[in-house]
Image 1: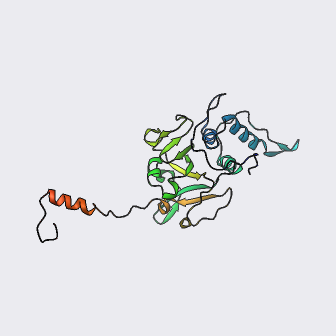
Image 2: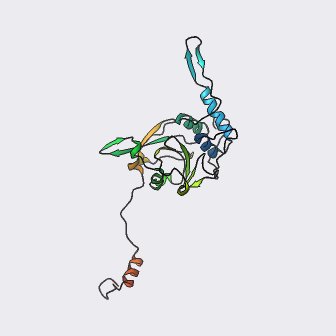
Image 3: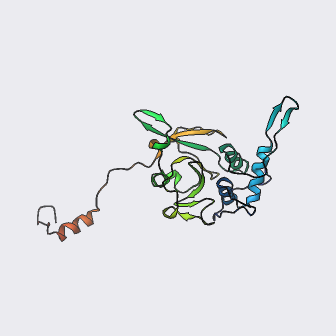
Length: 233
């Protein structure tokens, strides 16, 4: 049961973006509307309440409560993580790092593009729903389909998404029952941000086994390579 007054359980089978009826729809809130199936105003109010709970110090008034802004223009990682956590979803953020010259580092120039990242995803990330962070922008990914505040409400295929070349900085698998494989050597801690080396977890390409035997035989026969008693029959 979440603190927001309800248990959200599994994700919706049909993801659909809800737009802001009062003005500009921002990426973070738009993505969250598709995940929980609620109106944009609901997500915006949650973020405003989160920001309104902050306190500050004034020499003239002492400790004061910082009022929330009237409109939400984007959201931070902390706000995204807290929203997912409060609604009973997985909120673990994985920041992508790269390895070069025996050194693990974070350099946006070396990060995989969205198209490459989706192509190289390990099996554990191919069927789950994820909030993905790409260069100051949040998108929602399930399979090879993408949702954000600029796509159609029901999403678009990756081949038609206009930011396929954007670098992927991190991701949050939001499925409630999703857990990272033991090979990632991570320990689950709420609100933690884990760094994962992409070369260590991405899908590894094995050596090609070549054509099946029946196709090899077909090609030999087609090219006249069959020699009786030679083993190439």
